[in-house]
Length: 217
Image 1 (cartoon, rainbow, N blue to C red):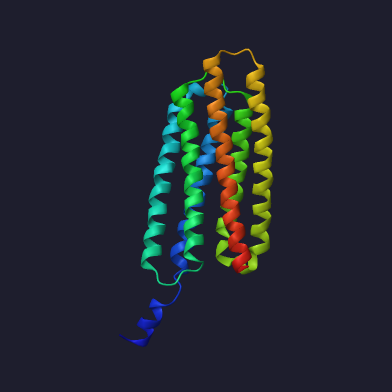
Image 2: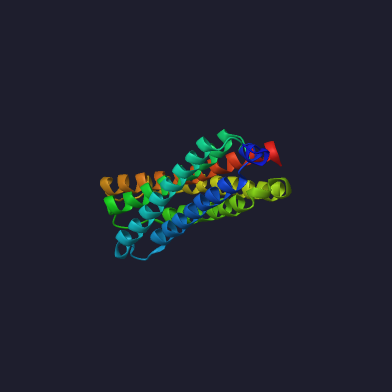
């Protein structure tokens, strides 16, 4: 084997991982955009099937990209970041996409009579958080230069997660103070919980990004 061939084996394949992580972040962002649309409709039942189908398609795409990331981790000797950090970032983004899909599917499955303002607010927060992740993921390949910028997005993600906690508490409290039927209350409570969980998952992505910044910026 020639020296150049040997050397190429030990050279980090940066180009393999960053586009895949960016693609996952793009899928997360698109899923969140669709989720926000679902919860912003005057009559969600008009388009719930189409939007849920579109979100499920994004979730399937996310699973495929995550699988490719794992394959590259197995096939690549040297990686641009620690393997556990790449794996954690891919996993947390994939988990957030999964929860977005679950929230949408529960709306279709439960078919609540109405969607309260808290669900719209949480969906908006999720969309904003996903957008912060997307921007951060697209500048991660220059982390030594963009570390401070990425950290700014991480802080914003944390602020959004705290905002989601407040909306969740107020929204849940409002449900129990209302006079709606018990079955309807339980449907909405579970949907709101799923949305709040998604905000937490996006914050987990931010935590991984912060770990990478600390190590490499």
